[in-house]
Length: 343
Image (cartoon, rainbow, N blue to C red; front, side, top):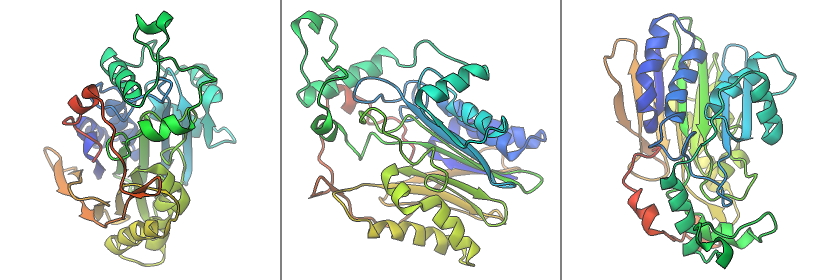
């Protein structure tokens, strides 16, 4: 029995392992571990108090996969429900003829299954970051609303160029990844995120897309991703890694190849990517496109988790046709940069 996770999963990995020790399934462990991150107000890339979209609305994405039967459930654009991973698991276990529910439909389903709802999903600290970010890129306020310090953005506001300026792909994307193997040898994987900060409303990344940001198969292994989700969607990164295992590649080679595939992507927007993966024997790896990343692991016989350095497979970045992303940072945003990230 073991669990691997992105570094921001440290707050939940011990609970997840205790679940396995108590006889819980890999699915139970993944859900419990991720819920701890989703409820953590200091983690701004997942769940409660995550970074909102450009309109100041928090939209959550999550998926969970059962490697024993290749069943999965996912939600996207979920608002008002902090534990997106639990709603995703309900999508899978309620035996719906669906894998992914989004937006109003996901919220209707969450209410129907009795998922926990919160009236307030953002702290004033994060709202201040959002306001200053918009001010930094020229979003205006009307005199009537200036006393409330709320940017003047409506459903009719043009956002195509504003989103490009407001988004900093180096620092405002993040996700939590968990992969577990239980006493029966079953593998489960889960991913949860608040998505890309200041994103265009309705943007969905790789986290709720089975095969892109998440995939598990007992026979071969599992992979979860965090980073620029659009890249993982285009390359089918999580599924590709598992397919490379199926082809007979050792885990380390399969992971490197899945990262190298991302170098073939064209277009103006290429950012960073990270993944964690394990094979059916319990061997595990973590990779990143930029130096400094880490992931965590905890075996059943370990008292606490161990942090391991990710292997670097460089992916040249470009943003809007330029080499590397441009940086536009507000004062409030700079003050948050030292906090833990998903790594």
